[in-house]
Amino acid sequence: MDLDGAQIRAFVRAAEELHFGRAAGTLAISQQALSKRIARLESLLGTELFERGGSGVRLTDAGRRFLEPARQTLAAADAAVAAAMGEDRPLRVDVWGHLYAPMRTLAEVAVSGGHAERDVFAGELVLGHGRDLPSVTAALLHGDTDAAFGRVHPPLHSGLAHRLVRLEPVDAVLAVDHPLAAEPALRPDQLRDSVLWAPGPLDRLDFLHQFADRFAIRNSATSVNLGLAHFLAEVAAEPRRFSLLPADVPLPDVPGLRSVPLVHPTPLYAWSLLWRTGAGHPGLPGLIAACAARAGRSRWLEYDPARDWLPEPPEDRESPPRHAL
Image 1: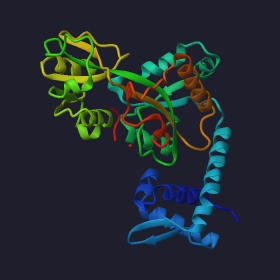
Image 2: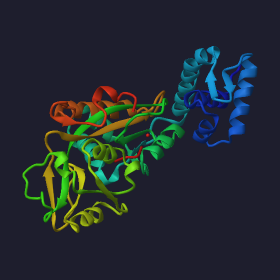
Image 3: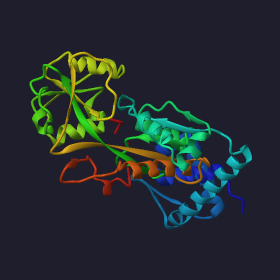
Image 4: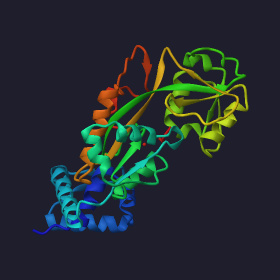
């Protein structure tokens, strides 16, 4: 029995999404085309793989048995294509959460001097054009990029995997004439009566949204994301505004701005490496290992629940979309 790769890929995507429309979207084909591919596969196998009903679709017992071998078949096919094309294709990496400068961490991995880092970054690495977690998720699933780096959070698409790389303390940035600007450190709840300045609608910015909910920040306002310098100039222009930045983000030369550490608890911004499951670029394991090695040496993953705050504790992050910040 000769199986058609396009039919298998249609089945796997539909099984992961349990929604033919969404699955078709990830494959850039029509829902009708996806349904036809799955119907032909079922006809060839002589069994139904999905139960179709008014409440959606579910895998049959045969579908559940077929899913993992189908994934392995696709991974082998992808590996065969990569081998035929040669292994010198650049590793394509996307980043998102650009306001928080994700390239700082990748740059630290690149220059830290370990053998794994030198092996990975000695070859060519090409940056993609990721905007946010949903767009990067689509690029990974389509094979347009090999890995991505930014903040991930549940629910993660079942075709993706991630590894936590860094937990970075977050500071409050506020105008020098803000009533709390002279404090050496602040508790997050002391900002309750200030205005959280956000680079987009708060309900689309997961980290800021959860911070506001957790610490009862009553007021927020939305800016337009025209870059970090413009964003922070808007913070500095109003004494009641504040925003959040990871502590290592270099501040642009904006007059009238102060950065104050947050304590009791200290919010942590979680950076992760994200990739598509199955066979991928031959340089991907080296990149994953390089990030893990640097995280271990630099103690990037230290977390104390009595001292720190994360929207999702580390043990809950193995199935990390909302957007980037």
